[in-house]
Length: 103
Image 1 (cartoon, rainbow, N blue to C red):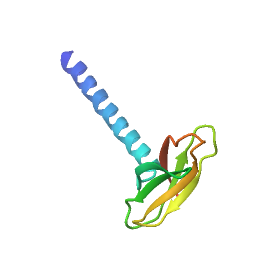
Image 2 (cartoon, rainbow, N blue to C red):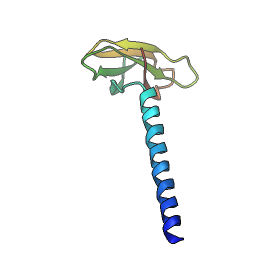
Image 3 (cartoon, one colour):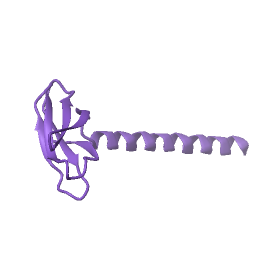
């Protein structure tokens, strides 16, 4: 009886681990590559900027700058490029973060 219960528990544990592995692979496959990296947020004059770098040397990368209570600016960086992106004025709120998206 103990052997049967131990075998059933082992099968359940193996099945659960396979399910978790499959689910994490599916989530990773649906997510876009993390190519755009934020170098720094800064102000120049009365404008707000963010310095972005594309870490993917082989392809262009797309991004969205997330702002509170405003439409989110979207853009595209060429492969292996670094650019200063202007996203608003100093009277507007600072960007929360930059999100990588699919192109």
